Length: 206
Image 1 (cartoon, rainbow, N blue to C red):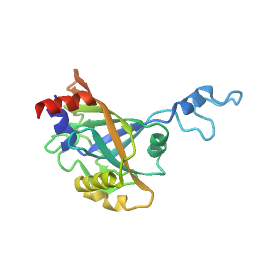
Image 2 (spheres, rainbow, N blue to C red; image 1 turned 90 degrees about the horizontal axis):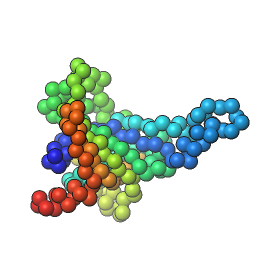
Image 3 (cartoon, one colour; image 1 turned 90 degrees about the vertical axis):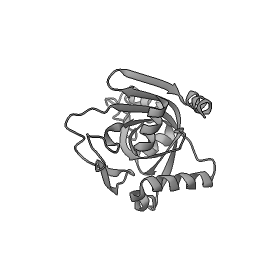
Image 4 (cartoon, rainbow, N blue to C red; image 1 turned 120 degrees about the horizontal axis):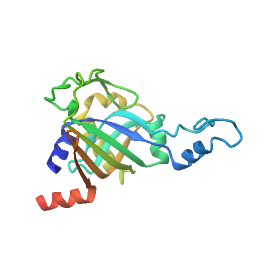
């Protein structure tokens, strides 16, 4: 299963990133502005409580313990991650090379405001992915400028079409550190592993 996870992560280059605001916002939404007559999440200045999903380009570390993505500081996802470092990523094999539901032309085009190389509207005629990986992660800062520069180079090497986007003012690199992974094969076969266990397994295998 670990080999399947590593192959899926390294073969694919796009994911759905889910972020959410902090608990304080959620409590404010639940209170709904006492006496204001407003419903949940309608207070002025309060972000919606619902998780926010974004289609993103990514590059992963060779050991799959980190994901690097790019976004603008004006985006909701950046605001969410700045206030609440927890995030989830969803990766599936529909866009992998040779996959019948999309094929190599499945994801192409110029970089957009969210750091995504534009996606096809059609994802296959009702075909479901064979593998779907859910990654629980935390947004953490890069330890050194050298680490950030190396991650930026890796992201550009995997997605050269992001060069103009990464050159824009206000665009930053995100570093998501993996905490756990859950691989769904088909509809019912589920495999779950913590990041530290995965590293232990890699060490033993090496």
